[in-house]
Image (tube, rainbow, N blue to C red; front, side, top):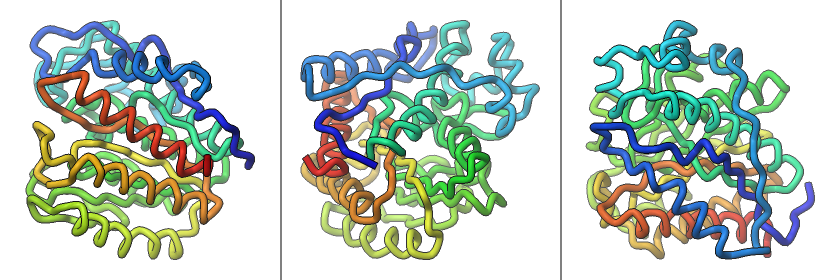
Amino acid sequence: MSGGTAITVVHHPLYVAPAPARSQYQWNKNGLVRDLLRDLGDALEWHEPEPMPRDWVEAVHDPDYVAEVIETRVPREKERRIGFPITPEVAARALAVPGGTYAAAKIAQQRGFAANTAGGSHHALHATGAGFCVFNDLAIAAHRLAEEGERVLIVDCDVHQGDGTAALTAGRTEIATYSIHAEKNFPVRKARSTLDVALPDGVDDAGYMDALTASLPGLIDAFAPTILLYQAGVDPWAGDRLGRLGLSREGLVARDRWIGTLARWRGLPLASALGGGYGADAMEVSARHVASILTLGAARTDR
């Protein structure tokens, strides 16, 4: 692998879908992340991915559910669980996002690091979406990479447990899952990751980093992955609307710098997905995500 001077960012126009009615999700976030990154000019290289082919989505999700999404006939009870209606634009986005996470992984194999400007949809389950997640891009990309002979470790640092990812990859010996999250946060019923690190409410920067650094390297040693998929949620921040942890902005940066540096030290390709981040000010939320991407890129490529 060779690291270049520019950070590779994966983005598809379909990520910026119009907000469906009755949606609690901030649909303008992906567009704002794109705009903030574009302002950096030559510091970034842009890549537009191919949407994930339907058969790779069906390899992870129930084909009947995939058909419900693509044909925009998702039952109301599933839409309630997801958190918004499935419109044609949302359905197209749901296929584009896993393609972006997979593309980021393939680029990372050559460049060391690449970031998807969407994704991290870790609550989506076999036959339904949940928690603002339609299809599980992490599980889909990991499944495809495993079929190509990779050993994939999904590192999930979102404040919410990666329950869907753990459930959808359970039993696959070429995929391992790590989730460090707020124990009392959504989802109420947790799945079983390969390694779960459940944190009490209000954990600060030092406590978080102690838990992360004491647990993740050992899993890497034991599992021996060939690539890392990173759910880089920025909702562990103390001011996040849906978080229960107490990290500062500097703490988020320290987390991502450590993850990127660990990947570099271990010689592992690192592909990040956006993950969670919530608040009334969409620009503030987007700035947190941009800081995460830039920190990861700088650490992983040793710029």
